Length: 71
Image 1 (spheres, rainbow, N blue to C red):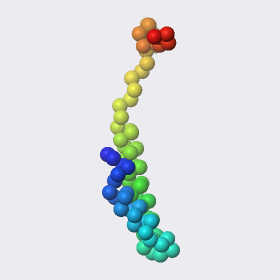
Image 2: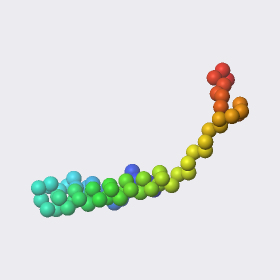
Image 3: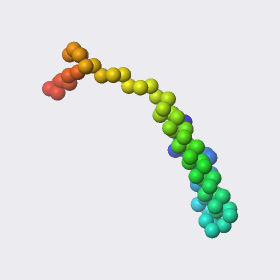
């Protein structure tokens, strides 16, 4: 999901930026923009939550516990 070039957010931003905030149309455009951003934020959160958990680091033995800083 590419949220940087989304057509819905782009259209909402253009609509909100081209209208006067003191009008009903301006208020509606701002509400649509906020809704589009909220939907994308929720989608991003769902993608992050879908990532698998990191495996636990080694606690015993020499493999995976030491970093050779002289290499």
